[in-house]
Length: 571
Picture 1 (tube, rainbow, N blue to C red):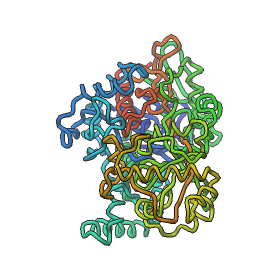
Picture 2 (cartoon, rainbow, N blue to C red; picture 1 turned 135 degrees about the vertical axis):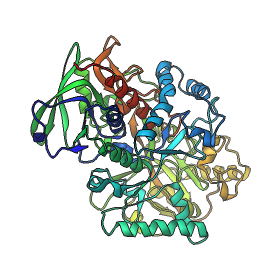
Picture 3 (spheres, rainbow, N blue to C red; picture 1 turned 45 degrees about the vertical axis):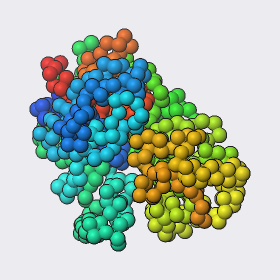
């Protein structure tokens, strides 16, 4: 891979088989698939980092029917996966698009694992999110990238988007859920002591020569593996801090693109295709106002590169968005806190706190309004209902020590900075907590009394918390209650953080066919134009069906786009 020092290093006559706009997970995958097919590729990234929001994600990739599924769920079939998607999504997206995803997922994963350093493993247990629907499974479809040694990247390590600081420990050490459990049990378990000691020793060694840890997990591992794999291909060129300002096309296809970097322009000829993988519309001011009215951009926990700039260029040549399904975006509840450097941390509450025993969520009336153990997408959709912004995630002292809350880590220590800046609210009684939060005290008292009673019976008649396999997996069976998601709030002091609905990615994107070709106004493909990732209209129709339903389809349709483009004759 050639890393361009500047656009001046590209001759005016430069031409590439494929130009990919955006070096997030989708764009890097499209570039890698094209490179494996011996295509000459230009990968264009507008920011200083590669990885996009994928680098900040858990890295989970939902693709049914892969070689890894049989290791944990040999009974699963593509027919069952189709039945699940039909039940969950229905007519919110074209069935043919979902079928293309299912038909080609295993091939895409096989090609990556056979021809690159991108490798996965199946989670032992990671249920589909609507686990009470027919066709759902408890495991086998959700893959995670294997941890990756960032030291292999050499100087390219500096290009990799660092993880969210609040998702690291000890100044940049990445940890996944397995690591967290071992670190918490360091003093009580010999296997955990060995695991944790190895992690800590590796991180101490890393910090002697690197600004952060080089043991990469989750989304950072996936992006690291993609970048390392791309670096092995001399037919790939990477242009950083570069944006696309113009698309030149005619009836035969995309002819050229005009690039801009630090005030310098360069026209690049396109021989076979242009892939849009810029991350979606979410930070485009007008598109955000149109599609996500009333949701400020500073509630978005995604990486900053998805400005939607490329969307206007595509719309100018006839591209249009698909019909919006359940929601134009995918969501998670988030909490916010200003960092010492003045930037704002937006923390997504995926699974570590809200569904655990000793926690509940209320609105300004002090009333519960959602099943706290439902998927983060449905939770945040409920947050958008009138009267629920902000909401308040409340816990007692025992739950705080056991699970942490938001950016506050388990253990219950070093709370002073969080209390001082108002991120965390603490009070000795529920009445005092309600007064500090400005919510109805009687409503909060009633809600806590109800959840305490439900913890005794193990049944939540109001919102059915802990009633599905997915929600139970979010809980804590080791707590000893009748329901792994329910536990009483009794031990003072009591705590709360404020929650807001944060868009974690676009569900609305450009309408495409099963080869990821962007459709024009007459619903025929625009020759040479492809869209993948969040630039492509989600095959899930705005329904969050399972973990990794953005990364899975983006990988498969990146494969299909690259394969289709490689088969074309040069214009």
